[in-house]
Image 1 (cartoon, each protein chain N blue to C red):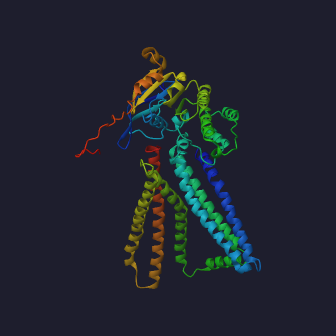
Image 2: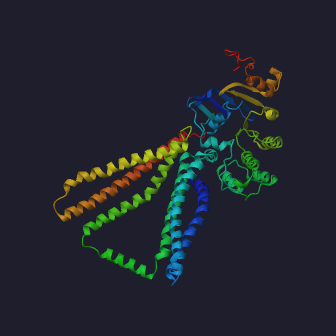
Image 3: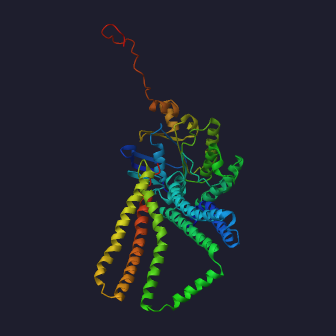
Length: 271
Length: 254
């Protein structure tokens, strides 16, 4: 059922986003040609080339902004306004409705990021760039001066990737929870949703700062008076920070998802 | 299978301090067309939304075929809300696909035949249709299901008499005769001829539940007549106009 729900959700989203993604790719291709064809970049004092580059940058920015606005509206209009009368009378469970919206929104954000990355590659990648990247990888692979720290770097990298994968889910679920709380109000539901979002953000930021800072402060005393000890301290501190951020992100997914589900299951208020 | 299709006991729903429903005890059987009648603000829509699970009761319990509102009850209830619930981007084909995907009792061929008879094009954006066509499309979707319970919230409100006939005819021709149809309305004279039973709601309370035949026998009047009797409100009467003004000292009129 979740997949069936996602089918309709993605259909609603992609019909807007596929043209937008195509515009980004076309603009990056146009800019590649403008930058590489001799004399084209300087044509009319470089104004057309500059405008095309500006349009390209704006299109990427716009795609992200529209994606965020879209995922909020798809949840608000799709579940908490008139469309909710259809969605909440389908024979599906509440978690399926939330998950279908959430996974579709993540697909939209990841898709937009991949298109942005692809467009950058279209814009800049040529043989020279590929050779330079190859050289960089070679240098990194043979960089064994501090082998014990390479281990740190890998761990940090893995934790950062996990946190980055979970991060869109927490961002999306925070919006969902704010709207779920906002719909409980009998009037000014949008205002209440915005206030909830601000309240949740402040609370999360306060708690995350405490969670990250306390272990760091506790370990300051371990610094010995040597460069190696200071470097190790920096590395382990970074690792613990990334570790804490990763754990906080995982906890936030649960902390945002469970109340959203509970409110929509037990306190749905489609007036 | 439960003998009673709907059972509400001690049902109460409040919005802040306002009680939309108060101590509602209601039992409805199968195979009937029931009118949920009451003036505006009497709690008809609230009761229907509670039965659909779109809002939650403050107190009391609702059972549909022995189950609390949830995925199972939603699979046997066909609900026509008092508003449009289509997404902007959808076409009739999309919405038919959706109903077919989620409701096992949806009869697509019936829906397509009804759409064709009304010249509703399958690939035309619903957003571009007139309000009347959208309402008809929504009714077609709801009545193309072989549901056990049809909850129709004000299906004939705000439409012209010809459209009313179409709507009532569509309901009568297409509902599952083993199931029950609950129609909420305050336009009683239009629906009276199709009703088997009526439930009168007043200020959130059930004031009478009876069969149409029994009302006619015992009261000697139509359901419409009884409704007017029960809910007759005294019109506001202006105080008699003041004809004489108090005189100020010196005899000047103010």
